[in-house]
Image 1: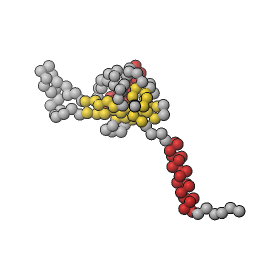
Image 2: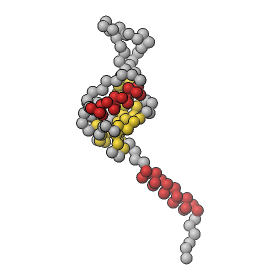
Image 3: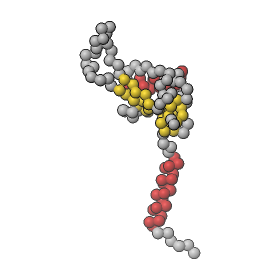
Image 4: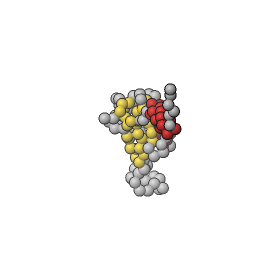
Length: 130
C-alpha cells in the first residue's frame, strides 16, 4: 500500500531537483592567470579582443596576466615633442579600462569589466589564481 505524498513535499522535491540540475549544468568562472608568458597566438588573441572592444590600439607585454587575473589599461593621451596634448578634447585623468581573465572548467575567458564583453581564449592556457 502506497501512501499519498503531500503537495508541499512534492513542490519541495521538485525545487530541490531543479536546483541540483542547475548546479551541475553550470560551473562558475574563477579568476585565473596565464600558464607561461603572454606570447604568440595567445598574445594575438588577447590583443585582438582588447582592440576590438576598446576601439583603439592596445600594447600588451609578456608579463600581463602572468601573475594576476586583471590588467588595467590606461589611455595615453598623444603629445607632441614639447609634451603638449595633440588632442585638445582630452582633459583630466586618463581613462582606465580593466580586462579580467577567468577559467571555467578548462576554458580560459577574457572579459572587459566595464562593458561585460567577453570571449573564450582558445590559444591561451590558464590556471586558477591562488
